[in-house]
Image (cartoon, rainbow, N blue to C red; front, side, top):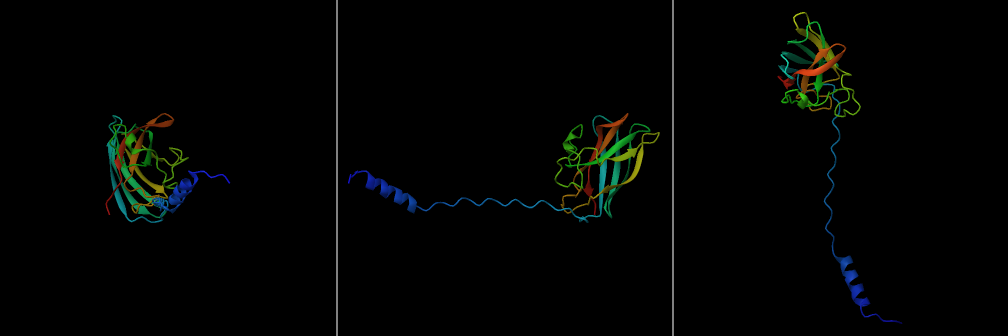
Length: 183
């Protein structure tokens, strides 16, 4: 038998390492489940003052009321292209601070909720039409939306954006306001 003088030391060191207690890894935080769609929100009414964006002279107001199957949006917007169709959309963030309202983020579809992948901007655009004076009065519904409660389809705290009209398409964001719960 061949004796190696360093072998007993190596065995002793390895056995000492195996006996050393290991510090446990910190637990991986659980990912919270995605918010569910609600059929009813916690609020009944919201208000949106619409201020001009993108250098336009467009402004107005909208009232939102909880309704069966969605949120009813009524209001008036002036300074629009006369006799023109315009878009009215909910956007993902309640931030109208950018001059062009781009801070409001992308279009928000309450039916898709928090997961906006694959949502086509404009797919759920509410159409408003200005009269000969450039004023649009509207009474529309945002299907599938609720007010308050934090569900995936909650639109409280998000932005309401008016898109300007050009022949055949919608263009710049011409007004923006944050949806604020009243009651």
